[in-house]
Image (cartoon, rainbow, N blue to C red; front, side, top):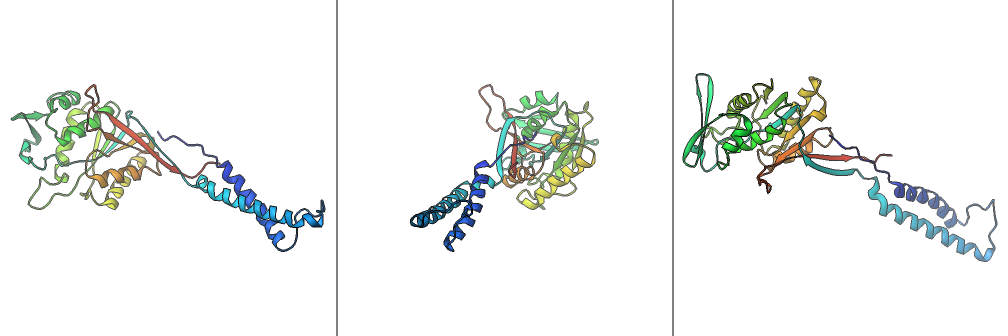
Length: 290
């Protein structure tokens, strides 16, 4: 959940007010006048000293305003915590086929069901076998990209209501280079693990180049807008930025800046207990609060 930051640029405000008043006084002094002459009279021999002091005070106030100008800039913050369960998860889906060993993964359709096999220590193992936690461990050592996708889903499995999948385009003649054509297999796999949760899986209607920043932000915003139309608050929406290329991760983070939406990342290196943590990030940029 977004943390509202309190930011009071008191020093900047004082410097701005001082500059405003001393600027007026300095203008009078340069024109031969003096401020507050209605209240007291300065001895003639000290008039020039007073004028120099007023001009010096104006210069000092202006320099202070320049120094504290940063206090009027937007507030920036990035919080990081272990993820908490969310209702809606948006996932840019990586291709399920390894770049160098595409044959290590086999996806086929038999009798209307997807059959997914992944090579492990020379043997092809089929998934799903049991629950999502079991199969994440079963796939350990395969470095299959969809194992990370399962990890990104696992913390939310008991609360999820919607998953939105975004796929990358598949090159003509090389269908294993993108993920869009594999979204049905991903949907099948997710439904097998979350069959008792009544989760609705949505697929983005067209492939998105994961290096196309504008296309990615449009896809993320479309997913968020769809969830909002269903009456779901932004605080219940999270974007996974583990899959895809770096522009996909950047776009997923940027989209959350002006929204109460967070993003998450699955660590690629386990902690000392062997756990791959799923971390939630909340990036905030907002004007100063008065």
